[in-house]
Image (cartoon, rainbow, N blue to C red; front, side, top):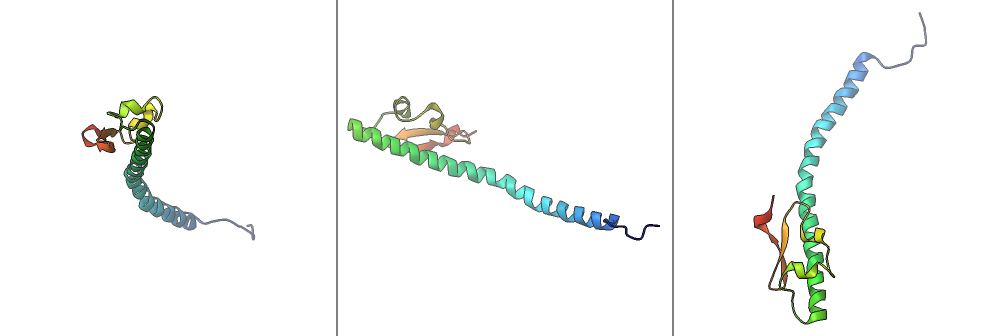
Length: 104
């Protein structure tokens, strides 16, 4: 037979595959939970951005817009009226809020 046989045995390969499987089982569920947190953070950032545009509108016009639609042409885009999770932004007394009834 050959004296210099280099390679992995079946047991070594099975141990490596078992370790990789355990790591995947531990990591994948944690990644799924992060999407809600990412969407919430993105929505908060979008809310702050639109609030800054409401303030810019107030500075230029000496009055707050009556609805978020007034900002659309010059200050925000159509996509910026809705968060990544589907929540619509609304304007109440010059403050931008999330419309909780519009959540998908």
